[in-house]
Image (cartoon, rainbow, N blue to C red; front, side, top):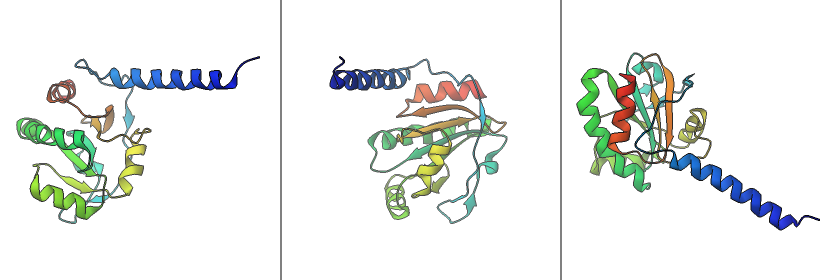
Amino acid sequence: MFDRRLLIAAGVALLMGLAGGYWFRQGPGLALDSRSAAQPGFRLPDLEGRMRQPDDWLGQVVVLNFWASWCPPCVKEMPEFAALQSEYGERGVQFVGIASEPDDAARAFLQKTPVNYPILLGNLDAISIAQAYGNSMGALPFTVFIGRDGQIAARRPGGLSRAQTEGLIAELL
């Protein structure tokens, strides 16, 4: 007879091992996904109230980042993203942030920490949009790399270093 608790513990350990393997795969050697997919559509307001959608950046390499001001890895990578936007913007790279928190919290944060790329106010819609882009774990930050053709090339939960981000951008240019 099998002990049910032992079987459950083994199942949980297996799932944790698989999840850990997924997270630890994100090393300096990040690569593009082997399969691409069309990106889902959405419409969200930017900080000026204009409605924006993915087609606004078609033809560019887009780095779509879901973030929140209460998320330390999100806050840590934003200055790097701003620096990369300055460096790669003229080569057709566009960073786009989607705030995954109430609009007033995002605006207050951005008053103190401005960025040089569009920020969309996602509020509660950001969660379902991130899920549509493949964020099944609900991780923040969550970054999606989209090729010039509008196809999703890579999805990365968790914080990214400048070197990791730059490597993925280089593969898409």
